[in-house]
Length: 286
Ligand code: HH2
Image (cartoon, rainbow, N blue to C red; front, side):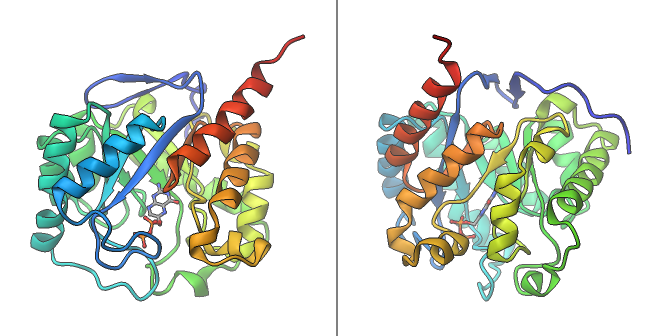
């Protein structure tokens, strides 16, 4: 394992350096017929643009476009189908909305085409492990990258949620993925790490990761969390998927107080308000 670089105050993407001096919100634009929360909501590019404009208005900083649901049981689309879903949406978002666009994909071919269409960040839930060509695709485009922790595949991950110390093991496994990215020529300033809430983790393990998130922050990269509407929040609150936005905002605040910088959410207004309060508290000196 190579030594961790110092924490980056900003995130280098293919098109800019994004300051991380305040909580940054990543609005979720799922262009999928089967996502667990917003399935089918943004399938047409014009619907995606309308949703993105509303997110921008509400304080989103980045738009994350995904064409493959990673929930257990979801059908993996063909590459052609994934491209058909995401590329027209990314083209329009990059042209019309003016926020940095991220592509949520595990496929290098989709990443390359998305970056050419105007995306500047690759959000890979396999942390470059699924497609051997992905690291090179990210490196050669100078893209920002989110390396998310998971084990196995969406269909096998629940059975792999066995840890002696979930926080230590996630940190170790993420550091190994980070090291592979550095070896592939991706600069440290382009790398964001994500503990992968809900991916190969039982509810209590997600809560432990949030409670001890400083261990992930200590790896020396900005940290993104994606608690939005996930099952572990239902386990705590008893609420169904559509009633978890307040719980999501609470999880974002907890993560912010422990050093997370980026927050991937469906409900941008709720997260923005909660994180504005968190940042005001963090900045208060009197
Ligand atoms: N969670 C999901 C998808 N992509 N990317 C990162 N970096 N972190 C996450 O926690 C994360 C992610 C799952 O949520 P969603 O996109 O709403 O659902 P689905 O995979 O069913 O489309």
